[in-house]
Structures are given as C-alpha cells and as structure tokens.
Image (tube, rainbow, N blue to C red; front, side):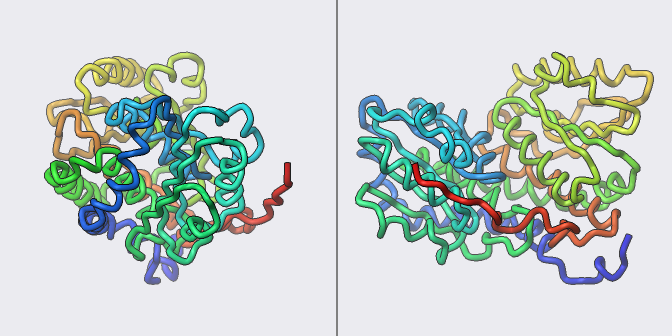
Length: 377
C-alpha cells in the first residue's frame, strides 16, 4: 500500500463519505422545485401509449437499470433502460417512432459524445418526444440542451458537489438514482421524507463499517462476483464496474442475479473469489437468495462472502455481514447499498498501490470518455 497516496486528500474518499448529506440536499432541492417538475411531467405521464426510456452511458446507464422496475411500478407506465451507447448505434430497433416517449437522460458531466448524440437522434427519430435531463454539471452540454431542441425539455441540475472530481462515479451515481426514483412520483414526494432519512442513516452505517471493509480489501482475492435481484441487479452491475475500474482491472469482476447465477455463471467461482451478496428487502425474493447463498456456503473450498441487507438474525458461514436498518420494501434501498462496492474499490485500489482518483495506469479510462467518433446517419 502506497503511504504517499494514503496521506493525500483524495477526492474519491471525500465524495464517498459525503453521500448521505448530499442525498438529503438533493431531496430538499427537489422539494423546492416540485411545482415546476410537476408542471412538466404530469401532462406527459398522462399521455396514452407513453414509453419511458432511461438512458446514460457506463455507470449512468446502470442508474436506469436500477431504477427501471421501481419507476414502472410507481408510474404504471412501460419503462425500459437503454444505454446511450446502444441508442447511438441501433436507435431504429430500440426507440419506436409512433409512441410518445419520455427520454430520461442521466449524465455526470453531460459532455460524453453519446449523451449528446442520443438526445439528438431521439429528436430526429421519434414523432412525439420529451426530454427529462438529470445531470450533475450545470456547465455540461446536456444541461443546456433545452436551448437546442424544439421539443419539451426539462433539466434537473443536482447540487454542484455531486459532480464528482474523481474518475469513478460515486455521489453522482447515487444522487441521480435517488432523483429518478423521487421524481417518478413527484406529486407525493413529501411522503418520502422518512425513507430518505432512513437511507441516510443506512449510508452512514455502511460508512462507519469502513474498517471492516478495508480489512476485506487486504485479502488476496482475484475475482469478485456481485449478486442482486430486481433493482439490486442494477446495483450489482454498477458495483462490478466500480471495483474493476478502481483496481484498473487487476481484480476481475462479474455480476448476476441470484437465480441466474445457478445457470452456468457460477462456474467462475474459484477458491480466490469473493462473493458479494446484495440482498433484497422483499421477503419473498429473499427466500430465493437465501437458498443460493446457503448452498454456496457448503462448498468445500470455503468461498468467502460479504453481505448487506439481510435481516439481523441471518447467519452465513464464511461471511462478513454489514447490517443496516432493515426496512421491508423500501424503494430507495438500492441507493445506500451502492456504497459497499465504492468503499471496497477504494480500499482495494490503495492496497494495490493505485491512486483511487485516477487508477488507470495506462490511461485507458477517463473521467469523460475519450476517442468516440460520432457518425451521422
């Protein structure tokens, strides 16, 4: 571990720790802007045949994957997560021309080439298109898209502090995810205050477990698999990217659903694998998850695991358990759960002698993607 790096004032560490405070700030900002958000969204959500498309690139795409089911359930409108990187290459097969479409774009910087091209293509392709932009950068190109499009467009600019300075998206990811879920039921946002307070407490509980997570990061695992169900599957995907990019690919990561893991992907597990279980707070779903992890715990190789979200009385062999306040069916639970992988990635990055703020030794990955050429259709 590089002591010189440890002694630095690292953006990544500061941005991870700031999240519970920023979630409440984001909530209060949305409350303050409730009327204008309602005025924009309510007429659109009443449109017959409306489709909601959640889009972004990289971690921003995974916001959509985590939020999709929650938003569909709240709005009762067909909702789909489609990455901007797919829209740019295959818009004809992903967006329908005739259906009214609300395109919800997530972006930290708002300057990724695909982010801008996706909204432009949607304007060309869809006959009835509406844009809701959720971004952390008021200076980004996407934030000002309303001045470029003739179609209805509303931008939600999150608190400036959510615009992470480090390479890895941390507070930007969770704050945009929280925003997407809250605005999907903007008419009743005040009723979410207790749940927002709960996830702030849960987030702080995970942060307070940093020494335990740092100790796990010292282990010599070479593979990490994150498992989740429903919205937690989206968090599992974000988690696998977070750890992999913060370790510059030195730790190979995968993600899957608990049930899907049985159907072949479990073959990736070896004696040097860490399994991370992101448990659902839905009692029915947890039954299926419990069956799998108890089966894996019988493995003679003593596979190590890290768990979060289980009931306090749940015990598992060879597991380190991070217990948080258990609130059944909390639609915001995915937000704080994300911190687990952020901390694991941060400490593993330090353990490997990397700088978490910029772990890519080769320069292959950047804070804002480089080298993407946009070709006109």
